[in-house]
Length: 327
Image (cartoon, rainbow, N blue to C red; front, side, top):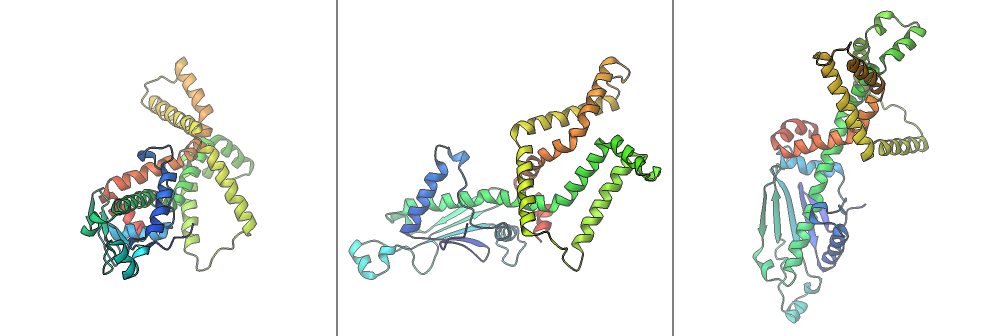
């Protein structure tokens, strides 16, 4: 969706240029966003800015750009279409609050949740002052909700190589015996496949080195044709959509929880392995373990969302950890 003329980013500040037509459009969007929902579940209808643009605003709010705003800044201007000429102004006897190009509303939003707002005095007596304030607040709420999405996307991008390597490592551990049998049939060195932890660490380090090497290449790797890229992207989106189904996520949480508890119980000798109940637990564990990588992939988005919430809740964490990503 293209950015409309009335919404822009200027000097790392989000600027709203309102007029009666824009107000009517925003009010329609407001009704569409709310629908039958309450304010806490308001649907996001504005996605005009891409992640890179909002990252610059976020970086400026942390003092990490040339403008160093120190907060997320929203400025709103208003001009009556019917008041562009002095004749109309005399006929209607209204004030034009777009005087000398000064904003009529200015909101500062800090990472810790504090909000400060300045209001031009003329808006208090303007006929549509309440509509302007309502539109300003609605757009701020809509765009603010996208900052968490921006952080989600960027955290996912930066953690992707580590996530791939970690899931591959867990896959090797979960499927260790079949992989060892395959390695022996391929006559691989026994030193390489004899220990499951050693195999998993080799895979983890190898994948990270490959990722690092590809990013440092002085030339761009050849890419697949567009049709195949689109096919693979659609297939990946479909599979992730299936795995991220709420029911499957509950099953994934149960699998991970059971494995963790059983590993702890066996490691701490809470359940004797030679006891009948211990053998049942161990057999169930051997049966469930191969599904562990799929369970982690199913919870991938949930993990990233919670990590992003931690970053936004504690501004010092966002500045010192996520701030390095913005650089």
